[in-house]
Length: 483
Ligand SMILES: Cc1cc2nc3c(=O)[nH]c(=O)nc-3n(C[C@H](O)[C@H](O)[C@H](O)COP(=O)(O)O)c2cc1C
Image 1: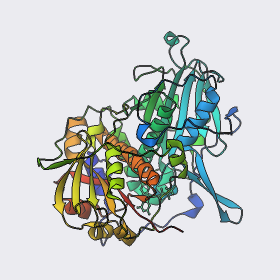
Image 2: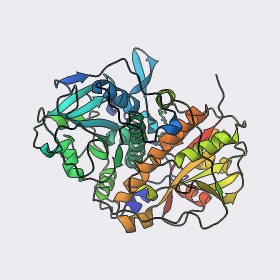
Image 3: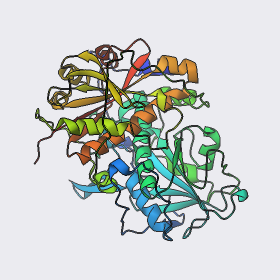
């Protein structure tokens, strides 16, 4: 792809996998990125290590509840940060090295997403901007002072920011990694929404902001990383401005953005991000299904604890061709329709569907899921699972899953209607709803695994997508072999 990418659809097509042309990237192990950002020689706040969370069932996590009024804000922030981005399992890899599994899934386990929080009038904390380090469970103070307007008075304000470090993912996936950076950030965003919600914070997710100003506020190196989402968790809205006039702790903060020796991201990826950085226009409602033949889903029943489910979530690939109660799959689909009252205005950018396999108990074939009406429409009949497994770079184990949940978007129309930033909206939303699939499936004791690797055009052909509409992401769900 040339450097002067004009449309985001062009980027997408240019980074598509095509059967017969996939050569595999040689990984440069000398340039392997470190998955943690560690600011050194800057004051850190040690968050409480004894973690406990409000016990809220997953199917109730999105409900409104009274705001947390406890005095222990460090415990609240410790709980939220850990459930959002924290370490959930440590595995010895041999020779004294360890692998840290995290609260969210991540393509290739490369963890490009970082979490920041701006605080004002929050008990137990000095006002300012902090970065959360999952490895040390600390918050590093990047700017100290009143970062929000003085007009805010004495009320507490909490706003989170999700950023991505391009090289972490691009090291393995090259220019295609921009897609994964966005999907990964979406996964973390859903954890953040759920974990703030269980504490009664009426948080709102926001993908639209002045990128340049926020990147500067967060002391990011714009060539290496970028803010992708903010969450207004307490006492603030998109209109509440932050001030970069509060000086950073040192002028060298952007230098900590280097995740490896080289750390540079491919030009195609940076071009795509530049295109997507212009403020978008709200996408219109896209027509999902033309058929009247829809099936309404019942309200989801997923009583498992939200925090415990996030803690035990993992990707599992050892699917077995065995039946599970159909109601489990219905509950998962129905949970995806729950509006967590934090819906970003661009949620219509994404279309959700699923391939039902023969063991799901649902009619085998491709179905649309209308998340507004919580109803499904059968689009194409037949067992399409083996074909989709081949399309997913021949990851044969996918054939044994009971269901493939698929995320698509009409990039061509979205780009015309809303500008290229809609590409960001669609991927972030796919990742966000994808994390919810992970949690719902985990709560039902089913296996689940996200798939970002597929032959793009073949996927679109199987699903019968019109020109310009593309497959963004797929998540396999089903019974697994227990150890
Ligand atoms: C956007 C995305 C794409 C992924 N693509 C694949 C894939 O193509 N094949 C696969 O086996 N796993 C895939 N995964 C799963 C990751 O490999 C997994 O999340 C990671 O290894 C961390 O493990 P954990 O989910 O058990 O914590 C993907 C995950 C995400 C979020």
